[in-house]
Length: 223
Image 1 (cartoon, rainbow, N blue to C red):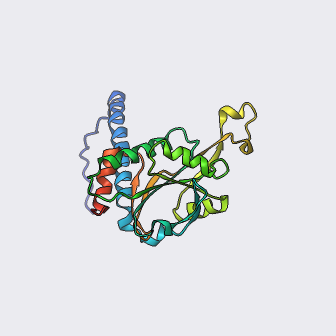
Image 2 (cartoon, one colour; image 1 turned 30 degrees about the vertical axis):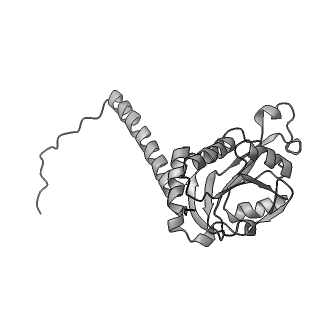
Image 3 (cartoon, rainbow, N blue to C red; image 1 turned 120 degrees about the horizontal axis):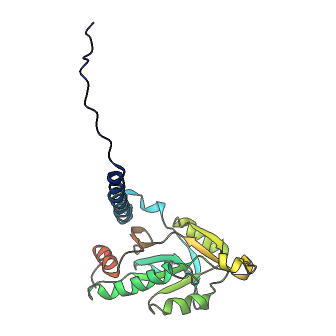
């Protein structure tokens, strides 16, 4: 039997604590940036990897004028749907403002999708509330609400996730969900639907107006 060589292998020197710290400072941001890029890219290309019938579906809601509204109202028109709520302090208003500005950046000969805002908070967001809220950003945005059952149904169809959390600040003073002392944490993306209410693309809601306009353009027809 051949004997193993007794030649000693040179020991690798362990990196110093300073070097390890420097590596961590470089690796962590790199991984975070890569994750964010992959996530955004994945959202932009999601429609190419999922069957269109898996996300979206028929809905029956109420607009700001108490008019019953279903997907049939937008037949033949693309829609850009966003789920949120009017008491949202940051993500929702920023997203609606971004959409409104993105539309101004689209070429004038392109047909713009009907922007639609669907509340996830039917207990507080009555028809007039969603109307007042959406008009702050653009008169083109159609705000929709409904009963709890109706909102749950459309949220399920679009795979929207949400969670109600009592406001910690208000909780110290006796917060109560029934009094409206709560916030809603929810998924935040833009759903581009075609004229037959079928999914065309899912766009990240945290993009800039220029990026949203750029991502929408390939899906839009000319007048």
